[in-house]
Length: 86
Image (cartoon, rainbow, N blue to C red):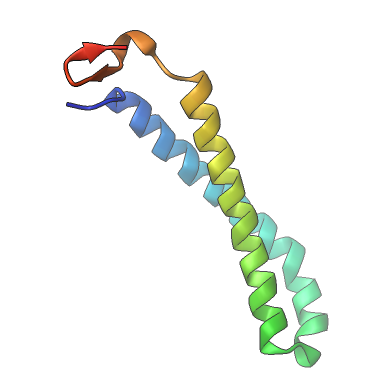
């Protein structure tokens, strides 16, 4: 028995994929010139920190999207848990 309707899960996954695909080109465009100028003198720790920051921002966007879907797009009449509707 699913707690959420299957269509809500499909839409959630689709929105997360769209968010990821929209973020990757922006991260590339915004960072490629900066990295070309900065890379020769950068340490490995700085490179890893920058990559982690980009992935962290992407993750925060995913968490915000999940919270938005969880709080505002729920269909209470379709939620069932252990046989009871909530």
